Image 1: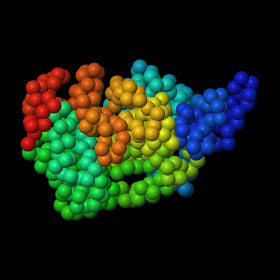
Image 2: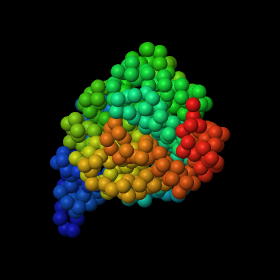
Image 3: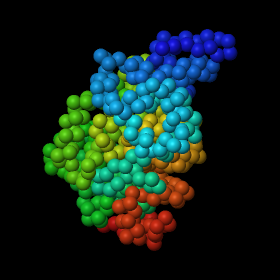
Image 4: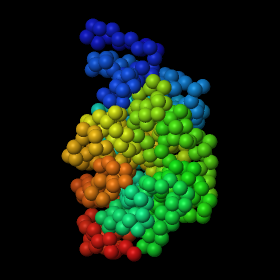
Length: 453
């Protein structure tokens, strides 16, 4: 395994695959903060030259966090599909990129090898891809999942209604949810970020959302994004719960900072399969974001893109209904501006899809990041064109509880109309039945929340 390259007559030598992976990464303020990024563009090219020549087998043998130090590394290694792995292990990362981009490499072919890919393989090939490359391959990867409806089908774009309220006022949450539904949003999930993380508050909100969806015969899912242990307690109170949520990190230490482990998530998954109220079979919802491990000093010297890929390796253990990266939410310390946030959103979507996940994105930024509304709108269109499973949606794209900019209730039908995409089929039929939509066009009750009881 050669970890050296010569560029313009100057030699570059790297001490480890982890260093190669970090320095091959596109510019990220988080990698700069961690002190692991390339010193300049030429060293980045040298790292990519080295990475191009490494085989997928060598990436498997050199995870960014050693097997003995991290349970996510052990899980990825011990559960890998060996037959699928054997079909690609001899390819270099550059050859793997070319194979993915070949017109004859269809989505089903990619899905057949996906169980044999470690997160480091997905991260490695991602670093060699252009924006167009990321979009082309992502669009091939159709990942279809089912709960109370079906998301991930070709030609579809779903959305999460995010009716957050700063005091968890249930009537306020319901008013916002009705507004979002009246614009055709919410087929991925009606998901509330709670201000009060208690089992009782979680159960109260879930019960109210359950009444809303069942009384109006809305084929969608509901979820309250409390800590997983709080949701487990809420289930014990007897509340309805269609999806169970948890944020994930890409290292064992990062997950410990979140208060979770593989054993805990296994317990939660088992409980949800027994007690969840969605038709299924998919019943879990995960959120991630580049920089989460670094923010808790749990990155082990690895770059944030590779650690993000490891989140997806963790998520696929539970066959989730939804996964999304909250791409600009952690802050400019990790993704500084519009170009970095845009690149990261497309990278995350690509890696999630490549690893077999129904990948969505919260295209967003915090108020102290250097990103414009125009750049944010461009990212939404790029993601939708790349086959993104779902986007967020909230009133005017401004979350009054979490205080960040995201996707509005108006944006989702606009992007669908632009790209001729429709919601999940069951939800689409309901929208047409109640007059919110008329095919691809707004119906007579579009934007009228009074259509909902």
